Image: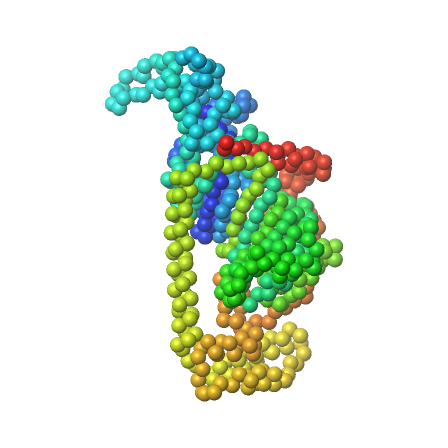
Length: 555
C-alpha cells in the first residue's frame, strides 16, 4: 500500500525548559545514553505523529524525494531541523527557538473555497493557510476513506467528490505539551519561510546568569563587563574547539548587572566612566530597600552569537573581580590576545544558574494562545513554589542558628588562629619566603572581644568575617566539585600568574602534525569544518544578511 502524502509546514517553535536533569539541549543522535532536551522533543513529535517520514512528506523537492526513496534520509534530516542555541548540560532556557517541517491539519489536496459557487478552486498554497491555530479556513477536502474495524475486505475506491469543511491548523503547543515532561513547555509557534534558520536567522541572543549578592562588589563587576562590550576576540573566555571554530571574535551589544536596589547598564556605545554614573543616577531603576548578602541578582548579556562556554567563562572572571581578587582591568589583559594568546587556568562558573533568556529575530512574530500560556503558567508556578518553600526553609534554619545558638569565645579564637596559620603556610609555600605572624590577627580579635565568655553564632560569624575576610558560603558560581576543593584557608593566585594553556596556533599545529588514529579523525573534522567551509568576509556578510531577513508571522 503506498504511503499517504501529508502537507507539511515550516514552522518555528519557541519553548522553555529546566535543564537540571538533562545532558544538554543537543541530542547525541545514535547514542543510547543520551538524555537531552532534543531527544524528549523528537520523542514527543514522533508520538504525536507531527513528524512525518520523508516518504510521507509531500513538500520535499524532487531530488529530496529521490534521496528518501533510497532510505538515505532520516526523519530529522527530512524535517530540515534547525536550532537557535546549543545549551550545555544543566543549562536552562526561557526563549529557545527551533524550526522544522511538521504535519499540517490541511490535507495535501485541500482546495480553495473562496469562490461564489460550490466548486473547489485551486489547491491551497502555503500563503493561503492560517498562520495560527485560532483562525479557521473554509476549504474543500476529499473525504477520508475509513475502514471499519474487523472488516477484512479490500477498501473501497477513494471518493473524488470534494466536501466543504472548516479547518483550524493544529495547536502545536497544546498537542506537544500534552506529551512532553513538565520540565519542557512549548510557548508559541508560527509558520516561517522555507529558508528560515533558527540558528542563522537569529540576530541576538540574550543570556542571564543568576547569583546571590554575598560579598560581591557589583560596581566593579559592571566595570569589568563594560570592557567586554563591542567586538573582541574572546579566545581567553571560552573553551576552544579548534576543529569547528577558527574565528573567536564576537560582538557583545549590551549588558546589565541587576540587583533589587540598582541596575548597572553597559553597552558597546558607552564609555567606561559612565558605568557607575548610570547606576547611581538611574533613580527609576532603584529602590529604597537596603542591600543584603542574600539579595538575588543577575547579569544579562546580549550578543549576536557566543562561543562554547563563553558566558560561564565571563561569569567566572566577573566573580573574581566582584570578590576583589582581581581588578576590572584583568578583562582588558585577557582580551589582548597578541600579548596574552594563551588562556590562564581558571574554573568555569556553574551551569546551574545560566539561562538562555531570549532569541531575537528581525522578521519573526510568534503566536501564542491564552489557553496554552495559562497551563504553562500553572506548571511554572508549581515549580517556583517548590523551590521557594525549600529556600525559605533553609533561610529559617540559618536565622534560627544565628540568633538561638551560642559558642565560646575561646573556640572562635582557636578557629581563627588555625585558619590564619594554615593560610600563612600556603603563602609561604607558594612564595618560598618565610611569612611571619605580625600579630595583626590577634589585634583584630582583641578589638572584637565580647562582654562575656560566650557569644551568639551570628556575632561569631561576623567576627570571623571581619578578622579573616572569609565567609561561610562557597564562592559565587562554583560547582559542587569546585566547592570541595575550596577551604577557609584557600589563597587566591592572580590569574595572570597562573599556568597557561596552549594557544590556538599550537592546537591547530597539533591537529595537523600528529599521525595517530585519533588525531587523523580530528584532522578530517578540521579540514571539513574549517578549510572546506572557509568563506570570504563578503560571502559571510551576504549569507547572514539574507538569513536575517527570513522569518514569519502568526498574524
